[in-house]
Image (cartoon, rainbow, N blue to C red; front, side, top):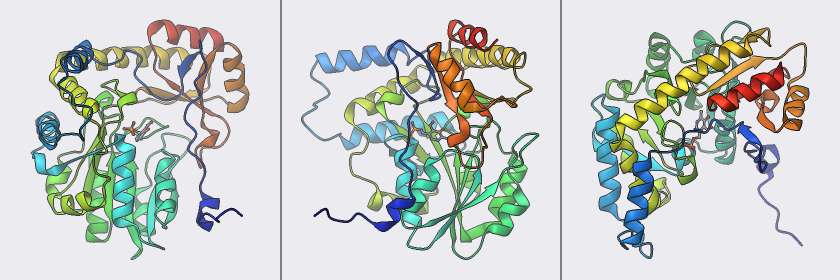
Length: 358
Ligand SMILES: Cc1ncc(COP(=O)(O)O)c(C=O)c1O
């Protein structure tokens, strides 16, 4: 006899990461093809060889504090070390926030299409995701008025990805302020800025201004450290104690902590990477426009294309046959079946995608 798992798990989809096929060009998970700063590798190898990382002991609190200090200097916006919390990627921080705020029957608002983890986390915590459709057609803006009117006494969280995955657009500051001020102390507004470095703008200063705002950032994208799983949240100070209660202890490992510190200290490499990605993003966008009827402007490290009248599944399968993996967006709730998302790769990779499509 098998022990029954929670009935609510029936409604939760397994997270499907971008496929990895040996030898294929993988442009399906918005990773950074340029990789991390060489300083990060040097630092880790040096410390491991010198036996300084003490892998036999749990991550040291002082190192974590040092990372939170570095992050607070990096994000500016007046956030102090005490406003910074760490997690195993943004995913880890989001999971903790969902478990802090969502009790059985509570609701969360999610403008769709967007990152699918939000809805899973809400369901896992026993809550109910409520979807608000972004305006399709032109630019996938967040429908601010609809979102505000969907907020009720059960709403505890509002997830806004900015830049949004998979559409690539940011929410303008005046619109997010309208949302934050309208929902006030009823709901926490979680702004997921996993791709902020590629947008060149951030809403992190809002954490100091409002008590119901948390901003998520990561080392997985611009810093090229997705494999190490380090993310962080900039949260109001009043929330830090609840965060410490709910977060898994030691969720960021000793190597990841040191790597993240080294990555932050090489700002020149970060600037260079971001510039290259932006340059390639323009190249990819321009060339995809030769093939598809609509390619959306992007502030992230990926580009969304409407491939209609073709179906996204067909286009992705054809590219796969040529050894190129892009994301079929039909897996995103509310995205329909004619969008693909292509991660910005190196020039060589981008040329291959365009050639294959042409
Ligand atoms: C909007 C968004 N948030 C968070 C993540 C996950 O970030 P991390 O690797 O820091 O968990 C992703 C990954 O693709 C994403 O698209």
